[in-house]
Image (cartoon, rainbow, N blue to C red):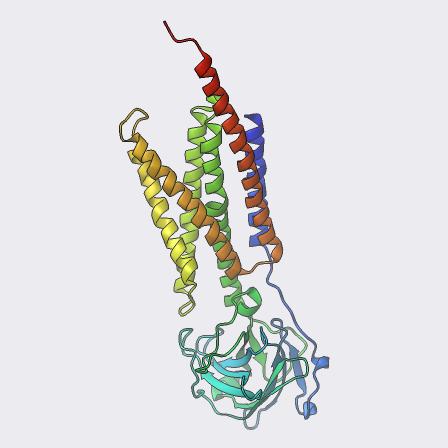
Length: 397
């Protein structure tokens, strides 16, 4: 018993450290150097910014007399054959409402071209005319495979008066045959690829500000991931192990039952909080859907809720329906374990934290699995010894 308690304390400590590490994990920032850029007419763009995410670079110049912004935007697509985009958002700081220039290479001709997108909402990513004039638009591919967008933009009067514009940039994996761009990743660098561009170039050497919306969303996603990993992915399996292996020791009765119920109820409460956070994230991200992850999450919430209510209908040990209740309880419980672990891995593939955290979770599950195998063997040895002892006992007079 002392050994079991020690193991539980170690696991809960590891869970706590794992949770805080994921929550405090910073967004990864990557940037290239303006000095690495070479192209004809470079001297026409006196200002250059190493944008703080996605290895993007922006050269630009601004003519206040006619409010014309000339830009050269460069970035590597997320995959070969992918796309890059640079946009101005006249009214907000995120993607929705932005006026975008998207460059991609034609799969047949190999020629890089630019398409304009008026992004009304996250679910409306189709080519369209921008809300302001844009001309001298072209794209080209660099030797390293990066894409580059050239354009001149007529800055709206209200933005020109403020001296700043909200810029958004992005990279994606590819373009479908019908011309629709494929969804980009939702890693911290992608979500934080927004900022404020000083048209005068007075803050050329200062990192682009902004990203509050992206940082907030990353924080919510991390909380969602932590809550669900701890509940469905760790606490529920530990609770099941308590029920199966502690009750074999007669001295642990009824302590094992209260530990089991406490662990599973805590996991359920934390899991419901994670599920609710996921619903909130979904409502704030129109057009962004991870169907299988969402559907498994809904199923987990539904069957776990049934499992909690089933405890209120738990028959006595000698009741004739107890056998059937046990079948139901165990079947639903193991379903929760399997679906929970699967969905944690699906969530990790979506959240894409540093590889260390996925490795850490695999280590936790692997350790729990190893302990389960060991305790299973010990349990069977104890059960078989008890049966043997009972069979050799003389019958009662």
